[in-house]
Image (cartoon, rainbow, N blue to C red; front, side, top):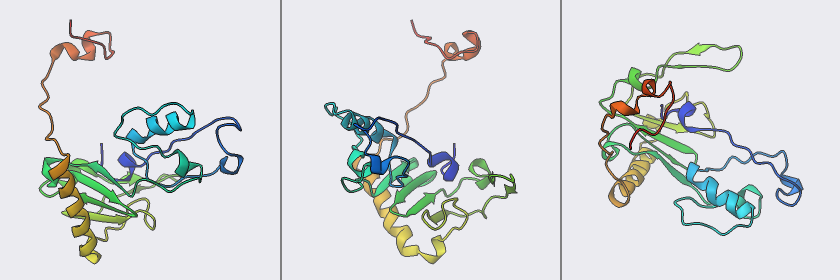
Length: 191
């Protein structure tokens, strides 16, 4: 996957009757920050079901306009103690840190929407900073213009490294997990 736009930002939608989604919010867009772990508590609150312990927060009140957005930042990925292949969104700004990793390994340009034009990758950089409000497709690296913001976000990354970060697990190859052994499907392979 990529830490750039296409691998991070996604579209979701909610559907429900008049008793669930307020009429003034039907057909509207919510552009606040929502993490994947927020969906379960959000749907539980929308359905008036009891909350379960979760890393997520309910965004229901923010989506319906009855309360504030609850996320101002999202640690997208923290790898190798935040030293490379790391991305963090703080407000409108997104920092990608990836020294010592070949640019072409993770970002080789992209295709636009119609008329489908291929755009080459950005120049190779140690850090990328994007203003997601002004530049939602992450074309303009503004890290050199905002070193103070880069340092603030790097400090937040280090906060997460100190308080919640776990090193990546060691993955062990299991030949029996290969879909070729299960008619081309992913299937349980441990007895």
